Amino acid sequence: MLAPRHVDHATQAPVTHFPADQRCLTIDRFSLAYAGKPALQQLTLQVPRHRVTAFIGPSGCGKSTLLRAINRLHDLNESVSHSGDITLEGQNIHAADMKLTELRRRVGMVFQTPNPFPMSIYENVAFGLRLQKRLAKRQRDDIIEWALTSAALWDEVKDRLHHSAWQLSGGQQQRLVIARTLAVQPDVLLLDEPASALDPISTLKIEELIRNLKSQLTLVLVTHNMQQAARVSDYTAFLQQGELVEYGPTDHVFTNPRLQRTENYITGRMA
Image (cartoon, rainbow, N blue to C red):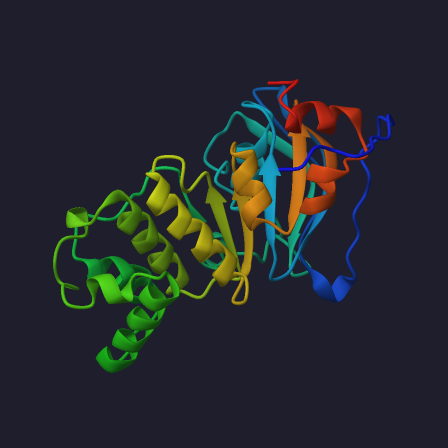
């Protein structure tokens, strides 16, 4: 990671705009609070389609909170309140006609710790398909092979599809969870520190997978790993204390940030 060349000491976050036909997600003046305590404050940013966007920042800055808001995982928490808008391909995710089940099909999420179901590898990937619609076995088999191939796992498990998913290594389990999410063909994949619990070799496989998947869908990654964000993302958003500090192309944010706060964080002068 290169040291920044120049820093503008302005205090306002630069705004990165994308043409309307390139936007997948638009977050507009979005705020969220837990029991009245602000967690996100007036966030505005656009996430481009078929790119990897990383959210970085210190612990407690709101990265994972924002990721969960995009998937509406806060809905069951009565202490959570929010304002502003989040739109997916132009549709407000909180609109009355946006069914939560459909949103979660279109916006898949992978968490820090792999969470395969206590069933076979095959049934893990088939799970969402069985919930959504009736498919002929051959069609279902083809989708499962495609999903496992897309998750770079097919060659490793094709001869033991009916073995327990819990027999897989941690890295394989995480790729299986990604395959399970891909099988229902989402528009967006949210990744909340997907490699933080994995060994270095498995981490590299997940990073390669992330880079390859952007040809199929839009990815949003939360990571504490600066090097990982620099390696895999096209755009980076730096959050601090629930606010968006800076957002732009990853190479610019890491090598030529506009703001002093960004420079302090990526060079380790701010925890």
